[in-house]
Image 1 (cartoon, rainbow, N blue to C red):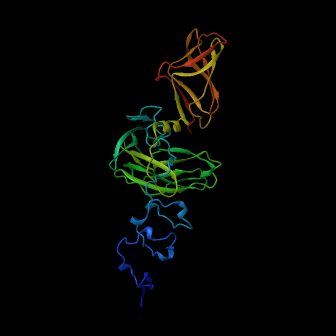
Image 2: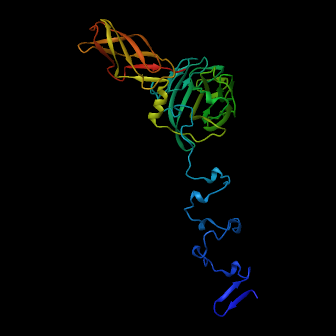
Image 3: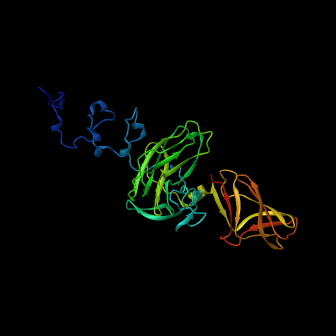
Length: 373
């Protein structure tokens, strides 16, 4: 007999296998009917407990042993780590030298810094540069544009940004990516890493349509002899007319073999990154001492420590004031380091031995601190 029945106690024993799953009503056995640790993991078939029956509070103490690999696609709420892009001002938001909202002339073959960190020219041909807001792939993105204003054969665009080397970059693979459009055939991304110049990746279409490209490159195993590597959104010789152009947007250089989404930084952060290389100072510049009736030494600190000892220049009108008189001032000489600068100024007459202040009358008059490559 499968069961043993007692007149006093009822059912004493049920033989193994007598009651099958089909004989148990749904939810008839709940957690209160099962003693702690009564069911071992080997008695639970794979997939036997669905998500609806998993409590939300599974603590770390219940997760023991080696966990299976989890696909990144199965993880939600996790974003890319920030600050991956080595390109600075890829969105053309910082323009300390000029506005560049309209075509600005660039001399033939003359490397010219325009929007911060970007240098442009065309070999032996004059051109113009500006940035503008474009709709690319249904998204508003800011783009840089260089267009030829002359003609020539077997010439090239030279649009570039230089990225400082650090020793920990040695031997690392980088991915270069961004949106490009041009009407010059044969263009490709280019990187010059100190050892050589390379044009990896696909040829950029010359149909005048925006397209997204990405490619990889491995940096040298020893970069100690090189200050920087430079990247170009397009490079190859070609025949230029007065309407040959190159446009690029949301350019990115990052570690790894996969291009990730472009990340916008705040204006303040982007500006500070740019000021490591170039800075404009207006208004109150610094304090100094009148060392003779016609000269003073003034010192000041840049807003951001510079990449290298910078070049300092004046543009516009400057004044020196010793508290009793104000004089127009000119720049005589400069000195200093990446984080502390000295200017020697000249004027017609101030009081020897007195403190003086160096300043400009408005933002249209400026002192520039340049440590670009």
